[in-house]
Length: 467
Image (cartoon, rainbow, N blue to C red):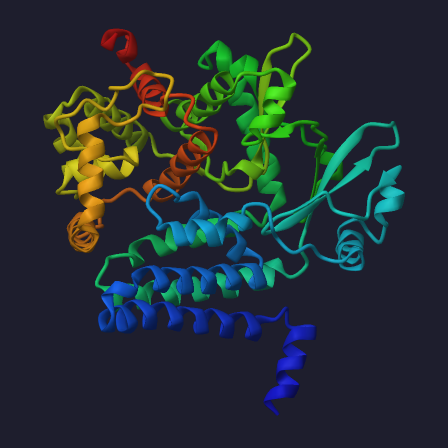
């Protein structure tokens, strides 16, 4: 009966039924709480946020796989989420269930003609040092004594990923219909990008390209060349499901106490970190789209300076040249309050609300009048007293603000035919950058740094001009 199939699904079918039922149940809980319970009792919004956040966080943790990545994305949106969501999702940043060593060994033998990890490597630690959404990492040693990190794909991920993305597609379709928000336009590009992450040969190639671009003396500035690092790949020990890379000793970028213990400056580390992604987004067009804190380490170099090490290069996009140029034009126009250029770029993309689009890119309010670079340059570009008062006013009238935002989103996405799909993952990248800076106390003005890279297509620095 049903119980027997449930047991069969759990043991042999990678819990596809379990996970899909859990997803549908959670989706139903989200819709019921916000569509029904909120309408019955608008004053219970905080309790509703708590229930829904706990439902989603629990589902992400129990389902694992891409659901962990979903949870990490939600956790990074701490600038817009209610406090109830932040509390529920902060535990997901570094938590993903690990597979047993027997499962990992079986997969490894399939990839290396029956050879066990203990024979391919001189030493292999069966206990993973990290477990993420798609894979887990083990420390090993080559026969010449070189320490390496071995990233091994979770055996169920290829099967689960197809079903996870199908459920994602269904949920987005349903949300669009129920809440009248254009969302489905992003599904196809999102699914293709996520599927690439499961191919470790693709990740190995991404590593090589990124490493070359960060060290290219023709276009990479000295800060990038000297302070950003991508680990080397051991190609002979890499397959589509096993990736062997240089071992890196370092600390998590958001561990402020350990950074201080290393004797490196938070300001300098974050300036390099933000610069790395300004360089990718506005100059090379080859963008790492998953720079959450678990994928970024910091180590001290022999000369005493810091080095930011980027890990997990599975999720990249290659920007089209016209998108990169127009996106840089838009950021420069926002900085200069050049409304004419803002409007021209937005019109090309089918966007009718340039100010709201600017707010989404900056991830802070933009009214078209207040210069975005105003700030002391060492406190994260904090908003002026006027904008803080505007924020307080919005909080005092939250329900009306939510209706306004929903209406502006609907208007913004009313014509998605020309809307660049790159915005989905560039936005994801920029949000992670913002979240890391905020978690360390916003030691740098990320907007100024990003605009400076947007300006480097020109022959002058806008920041120097502003000063």
